[in-house]
Image (cartoon, rainbow, N blue to C red; front, side, top):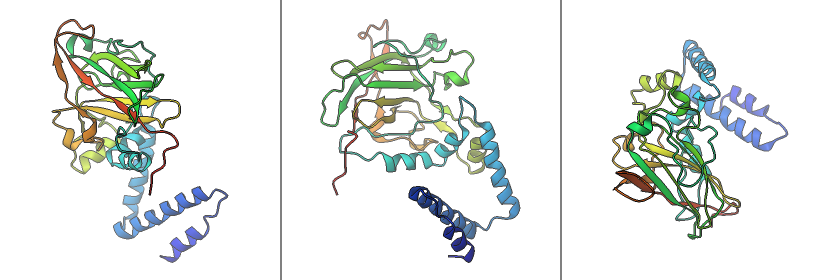
Length: 283
């Protein structure tokens, strides 16, 4: 430990022990980074400028810091240490930078109401919300959002109304939910900001595989944020956000009838198992 690091750490003594712990660890790792990389003053100032520019990119509908965290795998790392649970639980995944309030919708509603509904492949997505023993959870809230068939969310695309391809659904007495939509597309994360510049600099592509986002809540259970990924997508093995888990991949099944659909469509079934708030790992 250098004399400077020892001096800095000795002066971290606030009233909140957790803040002291976090800041001390951050300082130790940052000083170790400087010792290893030995940045020039110009490089250090460029790094600070990069963070300032990242902040300036943030708006009510876009958080460049979340995107940057996703691209570095940090969001997935934080997700992993915060979402342990019993066998059979539905794995969590990253939220991403495009979550926003969704309209409440009735079971079976179309969440696709823009021009993509005429172009895209129709889909029915359904399942149940359960506990880890398989018991249904009625009254759970299922918040879903997705990109359209060209890879754009409503907040990125002037041809979509806000709230398009989003929905809040409440499960019935058997824990069931379902909605109708169009097949989402794989897409590049926004590359016009600092996250895009970083990806280019380190030689990585910006693509995310096609997916649906979920945020599921039920009284007495840990909230779950997760994805459903479409099998066969070419970017499943190299997701820019490092969010793919095998348990979250589903194969769309071609159908010609059922679920109130008119003509051919694809079906995905996705059951969700939540963890009780009082769950403790046995060690």
